[in-house]
Image (tube, rainbow, N blue to C red):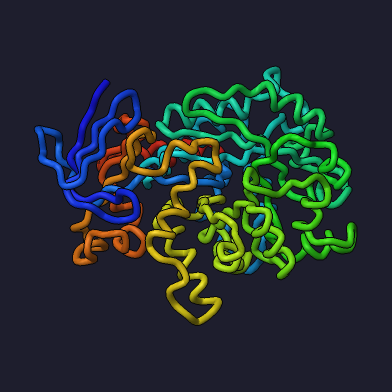
Amino acid sequence: MNTSYLLERAWVGDRVEDDVLVEISHGRFTRVDVRAAAEGAPRLSGLTIPGLANCHSHAFHRALRGRTQRGRGTFWTWREQMYDAAGRLDPDSYFLLARATYREMVAAGYTSVGEFHYLHHQPDGTPYDDPNAMGHALMAAAREAGLRICLLDTCYLSSGFGRPVEGVQRRFSDGSVDSWSDRMVQLRPADGVSVGGAFHSVRAVPREELRSYTAALLHIHLSEQPAENEECLATYGVTPARLLHEAGNHLGPSVTVVHATHLTDDDIELLGTTGTNVCITPTTERDLADGIGPAARLAAAGCRITLGSDSHAVIDPFEEMRGLELDERLATQERGHWTSAQLLGAATGHGTLGFGDAGAIAVGQRADLVTLDTTSPRTAGSGADEQTAAYAATAADVVQVVADGRVVFTRGDEVAIGRELERAISAVWR
């Protein structure tokens, strides 16, 4: 099927251009002309940017929004509430919750998601008849929502530096890296679905198990909490980043570490010189009181920075974008650490999810288009350029989303999405 659009304004290359004619065939751009004549193509008014990548997601955390804010606490007290939600799901209820969550993502402008998936088994740790029933539910949910998914099947073996799993963590564990790997290889990629391996963290995968895995590693939580660093130093005598490097060269351009909030100078140099990707999740890090990580220093050291909505306290890629800069301002009391173009680049990190052919309005790329209203109360008068996307727009300004050439959201769909979320989340807590 061939489709064309005339984009009133669009982010093409490294700038915003007027009157951009795009032609799409079989889900890819076949023509991108700047300042083109209409030629009868439907006109998309506003500012159009490439589809955005949510590089770190835990879909079931969406059930927690608005339910974890009473009283004082830390990440660790929040985790107990998260474990409560994790214990309630089965493949059917997880499918419904994930589908609604992914539809909210699509409505916000995301066209790819990296789903960091460790909720594998039944509550007592027994595998389902289909050992990947929960993963298959996530894949099906993304497909129905119109969202590409990289299922990051996650190894989780310990409650912390050698201690056995306990409680709901039994759902997470395969017992060993070999058993996890044997189950994971049964997952099959497809068009719009990629599969990658992940370690939950160095506290959840012992060093000897880290050493036993030699395939490419995609994602791992790293130094999210000071307690993780302290226990790692006490147990192994090195930081988590150094442990990953020494236990199997699990750093490099094919690896994404998530959070990287509490790093030493040596950690930053190590991640930078190895070219490791770093996924920052600003709205989650502030919601959980995790802290502000050294994202700008990591970028300067040589890391590629990507963004994710993680716990889904907020699903808004524009909030994640500007959070990268605004958090840096709070930490340094200076402005201007990231250009708007750099923020858009961080928000389009599809390549770290196995979709290197997405994230740009260019011939040959996957045809993803996110069109923003430039006349809303938030965006009016902001210039309708890259700064509008990075500093003015919110998810509420998304008018239409095209993914792989197919319209997957138009303004007005959010009413039905809200109802679907209400039903799915209410079912979790019943």
